[in-house]
Image 1: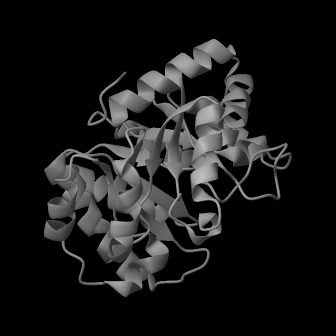
Image 2: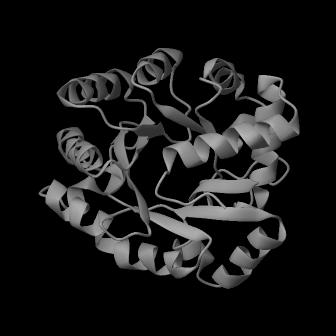
Image 3: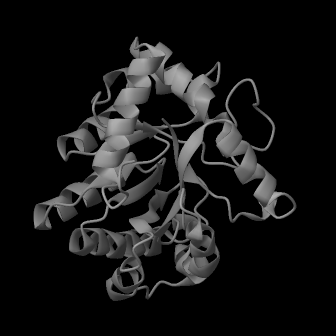
Length: 258
């Protein structure tokens, strides 16, 4: 059962052919997609696509956009998450590579998302880049205040943070980066991820997997990610499909399993 756990179908890269992209995904056997919120101010556009029965969505603000609304409240996220088509909180987190928002504001807004995830019981969709120490510290600090479910999305950070997140019961998603020739460090971490808590994503329109690298990514390409995960873990394709499907529904448990 092909599932793309992280798509950005509302992105402007799809404005010219969005319906065709979604149609190609379905033709390729993709049964479910989760459209990810990049900022709360854009939620209406994110949510509009989730009116379709095979598309769900999240609510949240990416760390790049944290400066847009430093006063974002958990109450706002909780209210929007009451929509039954919302299945996660985020994408949120820390990105110290681009620093498009001040680091203190990123951390402040991230903690607000954690509170919303804890209160709603919905999984926290975490973006982390070049922020391993601070991410680990915030997650452990917040987890000590009360548990919450979390997904380390498109995980390309270090093995130490992966171990710290796994100790809190985190799920991990694997993207097209796993197919890149130079990404052996990423594949090494994938080999150590908890086998019952791995899912797959495209993060389209970004990070197209080999053999489509360099092009705009689409949900129809998710099978390439699943095949690489199977290879890296030494699983058959059927086993990888079954494992990632089970892990997806265990994490996004607001979505009824067909």
